[in-house]
Image (cartoon, rainbow, N blue to C red; front, side, top):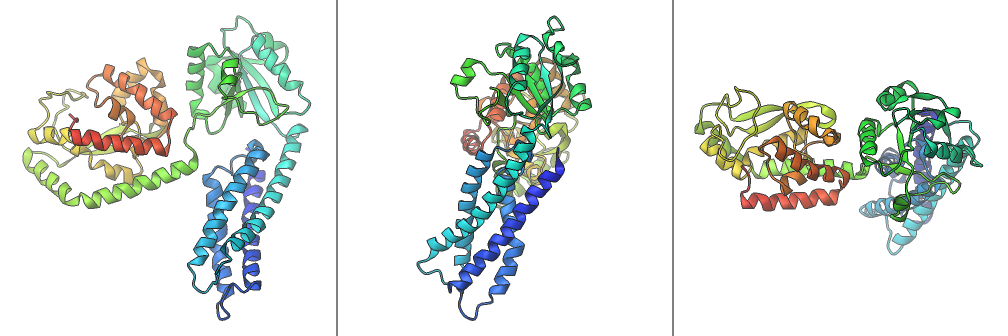
Length: 467
């Protein structure tokens, strides 16, 4: 990661926001927007502390401060245009709440002036800096340590396509690893062979790989899936691309950022944008706090019923595996007799003798899950996400379905697509069947889908389909 360029990019953006705010306040003052007795200097100073910071947060949430060497000028221009327009509208609307500022019929004029000042300064800076960055890449001054997976004729053609381009794309090939057991390694005449698929992680770390290009046949689905499974832990540090086939191109999956670039399909394993992740977390916290407050009298009733239903604690704590494989303690209202798992971990079933009579009522309406709102507040869980499991069962699932580890990329949830579509699982086989729904959720994550799952969950709760 080239740190100084990213630091300069962010810092100058911040300074541009300060300058634009100063010029905008000067414009308002010169055009008699303020009442004569109003302290304009105070507004200016308050804005200096708040406005640039808010602009920084907005651009961060919309992923405009990723590695500057990966940014497309056209993408930056279009997003900066949109974000600047929306932001300027919001800031002027906030200023309208101040009765000492007289906008009258000049609101649109004020928005336009602020937008022209801020966007004009910002886009001039961004395009100038990104053009400088682009020239460094094209001239080979900087580049990305690149690894090719595959060594046959397909890989050779890709290598020749990239190295014969008029302008460099920044790929500095460190070598390749074979994907066919070493049977055909035609690429070795151009770059060194660094091992096989078993050596992939070692090579990525030792060679500080930033780009991985998978040059195998896209029809080799199992091999491709296995490679992507092994690469998922590097999704935030390594750009992963494959050679598309004609079907991918016709589907519109291939997006070109460089007119003279090689045709490659970028694999993006993080489907939800940062701004949606931020809003999702705010929604998780808000809903959890509201539900705990609204349901507090009912929760007190559940506490008393649980206390007197059978001997034992009110809350049941159990270790589950969360995001990135981190263990945490999940909270539930106790629905089983104490020492229910003396014989080892077991999945519950419809006629489970370990469940108390009150526990069966709670499970039917999923009331035992209410304490998990506390897990959400602690950051261990989300409202929506794959259900967390114990390490014992995860190991059993992973032995048969290694791609289960993709579920660990996100926070587990109180409810999930798998929970809504399939329900609770009583066996490993049922957990494997439910897995496909949770994998679909991971690949299609969005705020809209989360809200849809929450509504379906409410419907399931009213039907009393828990167990």
